[in-house]
Amino acid sequence: MCLHSARRGSTLPLTIVVVASISLLATGLLHTAWRSARSADSARRAQQVARAVDEVAAQAVDSYGQDSLTRYDLAQRVWRANAQVDAVRVRSAWQRTHPLVAWLELDAQPDGVGGAPGTLAARRTERRAFWLEPPAVPREAALTALAMVEGEDGVSVSESAPTHSVWCPGTYLTSTVVPVLAGDVSPTSGRLWTGLPLWSAMTPARRVAVEQAWAQVLSRLPASANADSVQSPISDPGWRALLIDVPNLTLRGPLVWQGLLVVNGSVAIDGPVEVRGLLLVRRSLNAESGQLTVHGAVIANDALTDVVRLGPSSRLRYDPCAVDLALATVARPRASVFGLRMPGRGW
Image (cartoon, rainbow, N blue to C red; front, side, top):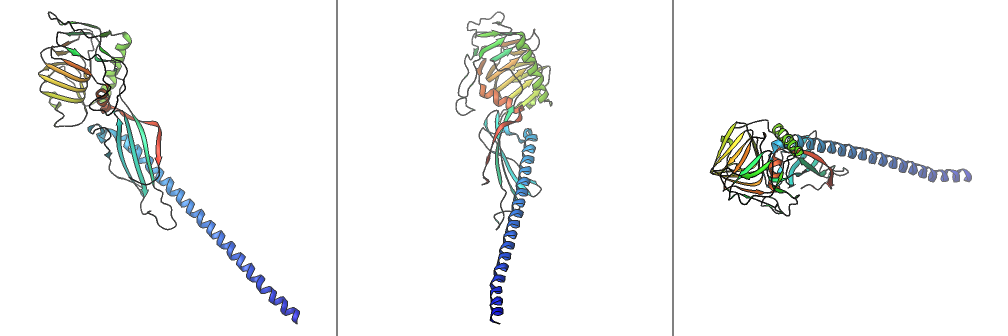
C-alpha cells in the first residue's frame, strides 16, 4: 500500500513537467509562427513600398518636361504632387545641382502604419540621380557658322570661357574653345575689322555635326510659335525653349531672351537684343545695325551662301553654363549608374 502511494506521488510531478514542456513548446511554436508571419508581412509591405517608389519615379521621368524644372534656379527643390499607389503614399521632388544633372527624392510609407505595436513601418526614402541628356549641339566656339562671318571694328567676341557664371554656383569646368568657328572670317564689305577674333576653319566633320544638331533640336521642339512669343524673362522667368518657324524674322529691342531660341529661317537684329543661352539661326544672321549681346553661344547658317554679319555693337561672350542651361530646356532624363538609399526618416 505504501509502495502504490509512492508511485502515485511520483507521477504527479512528472505530469506537471510534461505539461509544462508541452506548453513551452507550444508557446515557442506560436512565437515562431508569429515572428514568421510578421516577417512575411514586413517583407510584403517593403515590396509594396518599393514598387510604389519605382512607379512614382517612372511617372516623374515621363512627366519631366511638364514639371517645368528649368523655370527654377539651381539647387531649388521642386515639389511634385503627392502620389497614391495602392495603399502607399509617396512624396517626391526634383532638384538640380548642375544644369544637366537632376536628383529625384522619394519618400514612401504605407497608409495606416505609424509605429503600431508589433509592426515594422516599411518607410523608404531614396535619392536617385539622373543625367539630363541634351541634343548633341557643338559647343566649340562662341560663334559657329557654316559659311562666312563678316564684321567691322567694334565687334567683341570673347577669347576665353569663364570658369564662373552668374547662373551656376562655384567653378564651372569647360573645355578650351575658340572665339569663332566658320567657313571664313573677313571684314564687312567696305568696312574695317582690325580686331579680327581668333578662329578655326569649318571642317566637313564639323559641318555634319552642325546638321545633326539641327535635326535633334528640331525633333525636340515640334511646336512652333510666332515672333510675338519672344518676351522678356521679367514677365516669364526661368530658362525656356522656343522655335520660331518663319523665313525671315526681325528681333526688335529692347528684348531679352533667356534659354534656347531657335529660328528656322533668317534673322535681323534691330535695336538692343540680348540672348542669355543659345541662339540657333538656320539661315543668315544680320546684326549690322542692331546691338546683339549674347551670353552663351550662337550657331548659324545652313547653306554655304548664308552670311553672319556683326555690327560694331555686337558682343558675344561664351558662357558654358548658360549654354547648358539653355540645352537643359529640351534635355531628357536618363538614369545614372548610381543612387542613394537612405533610412526612412522622411523629410
